[in-house]
Amino acid sequence: MKLQKATLCGLYAVTELAAHVDRQISAAEIAAKYDISLNHLAKVLRTLVRANVIESVRGVGGGYRFCGNAKRVTLYDLVMLFEEIGPSAQDAPPTDFAEGRALGKVLREIDEIALASLRATSIAALVKVIQKETAADPSAAKASHKLGANA
Amino acid sequence: MDKTDDEMRNPSFKSGAATVDDVVIRAAVAEDVSDIADLDARSTGQLKRDYWQGLFDHISGHPATGRAFFVAESRGRLIGFICGEIRAFEFGSEPSGWVFALEVESSARVHSVGTRLFDFLADGFRRAGVNKVRTMLDRRNELVLAFFRGQGMMTGPFIQLEKDLE
Image (cartoon, rainbow over all chains, first blue to last red):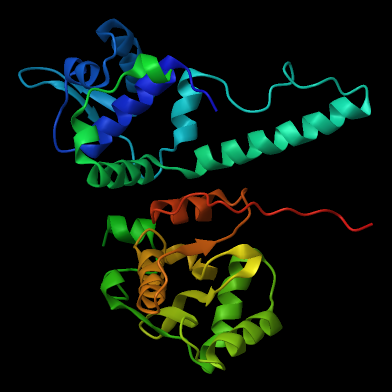
């Protein structure tokens, strides 16, 4: 599954904030860590604020903080803020012959598995995976993440 | 008196009554099977006494290493259970612990009862020498899928296949 750049920015920002709920983090810090353009990130953060997943804190030491329920907000919830995912009637093979219907059935199966994984993965669960990855390779956590290379 | 947040969320954990601190995890005994079947029926809408009796007998009647059936009890009331065993070389799999069933009374959820049950079973598997725990469930069961993912579980390398037999 390929996610759009804005979606990845949003997921990076939310996991970063959810992993550090005790402090506010500035957009500049997030942009620097993940090598994202600040302008692009600002748009993404506005979407997340409107969805009540994060909130902005004004003043000295201000920034953003996670304000959702990390055990309840899922990857699916976040991805859907930025792009439509799941079976698309437009992209489905034509159903007026058996080959198309059969192919559509297999493609739907793949979509359903992907959606089930996104719906069942909470931000808290993802943060746990990140912590495990970081513990396994601490040097990787310090490196700047080249979003452009992955998107 | 106003209800506390805990009471609002969870009527079974009222102040003065049972609290999460009262929850005890212990090995299931024969007398628990009826309560286990009832708890499962409240969740699934299907009463399956014979199934639970058979599973209990399978696990407790053969106390081989790696088979376990635990219940969570709060002030004498059964509020959850978990069971599983170590299976080896089925479907080409190296020995691993399998969680067959996990259930927590709806009013006792969000208090780590499921996590404690899972940890008990996983510890037993670990002590028995396996380093992998698996389970299988309906992909539409988002609540339980999310629970297992919250325990650090991810989709494994096996894919379950099926077909209608005509």
